[in-house]
Amino acid sequence: MKLFTNDEIRAIERYTIEQEGISLAELIERVAEGVTDEICARWRSDKPTIIFAGPGNNGADALATGRLLCHHGFRPEIYLFNIGGNKLSADCAAQRDRLLAEHPEVIFTEVIKSFNMPQLHASYLVIDGLFGSGLSEELKGGFKVLVQNINDEKATVVSIDLPSGMFGDWNPHIVNRDTVHATLTLAIQFPRLCFFIPDNAELIGEWKVIDIGLSEQAISQSPVNFCLVEKRDVRHRLHYRKEFCSKADFGSAILYAGSYGMMGAAVLAASGALRAGVGKLTVCAPKCGYTIMQSSVPEALYHYNRGEMNIVDIRPERTFNAIGIGPGIGTHELTVKALEDFLASINQPVVLDADALNCIAIKPSMLNTIPVLSIMTPHAGEFDRMFGPQASGEARLRTAIEKAKYYNIFIILKGHYTAIVRPDGKVYFNSSGTPALATPGSGDVLTGILLAMLAQGYPAELASIIAVYIHGLAGETAAVDHGEYGVLAGDVAANVGRAIKDVMTLK
Image 1: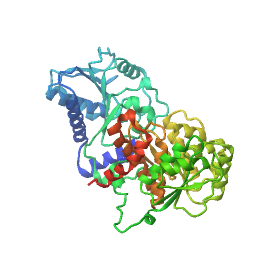
Image 2: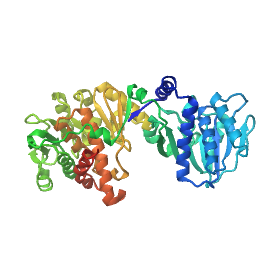
Image 3: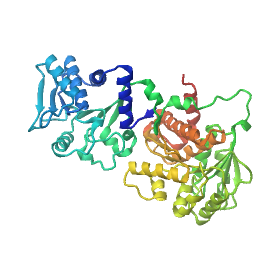
Image 4: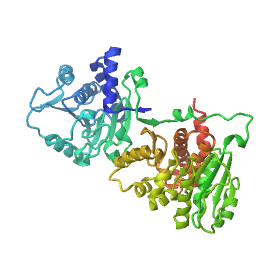
């Protein structure tokens, strides 16, 4: 699914109006119908309801919603903010007049000068139609106080389009107290970039998209820098296996993993790779890992790395389709040196995860020798150790975009909506996953899946998209049996094959 910026959405709206003959008033009615349907599906008509409508078209959406709610038996108390008078957009004024004509009994206040905040309680439903995505600057004065009062009362809040006080794209200077804390955000036509930033989760709450029928042609023809990966996207990229095939058709991979006390990471990564269909897998580990690897993952080849307790040499003895380094290798000085020497000598893209990233953080000059189109898979802590502390999740994503471009690499920034950042600056957010994945070793399984996809011939971009989605879906599948608390990384690895089957059977 494409994720559009505010400006891009406005361009699509203009195209819909100008080229397809749909009026803005009709689009407002569609928004109101969608919002009303969602509210009626969730709450009874006797629920105390207050609507705050701003002077622009978000206010028009809110007023139209109020009118339709009256049709469904709700008795909303409506406040329209027209501070100073003559500040309403033409469509907002038209919706006001229609509301009052159809429902003269409605409790309606048009705020032109002073405003007395109504009494709110936790039992109330508040519909936020103050500004939506139409905001051009941070809230000030009376509107800021109004938002703070709404937040203080802990009522159930439904925001139309966006919580008022937020911007649809980047929010670098947002103050949470000065932004509506929505229980439910009903986005118009598209989810927004800000929905996928962890800093904004408490402001947006649950979110859902209302389809208002904007031009499919304009949507398909509009290029974007941000996308949301869904199951059908992965299905279109995964290949069926031919009946007459052998393991030689699915590539060979080598995984440098493990050290004394951390061989579990090697086992989990290897299990993920094998469950994801790699043809041949060699695990290069220190001598202490021999028995563990041979007994835990007998399907993988074991290659002795010379070190007794740590990896001290990273030098593939033959050509592999994919190379992965990092799970459980530790940060011993000999391991750091081995990685440094390897990166300086290799020109094949590699997968770098976990302790490989921590080794780079110890010696940042290695960033300059990472082969182009390699893939890094950091979580927030690993990212900050390499590139410096980040003030927020948004800052971290923007830095990832910058670094991916600068070093010409892919960065998989792990999180609730894992972001796959391409060297050209485009970003794919992943839609699969569950809090059950917040378990030790989960990232090692992802490294294995990614390695397997690369070995099977998927280019780095597609391998990243597929691996991240499958990993998230495997976590969801594991949680069905074990619950969000009980899932272990081994359960995730064990469900990788089921996740792939689930995707492949999508019609």
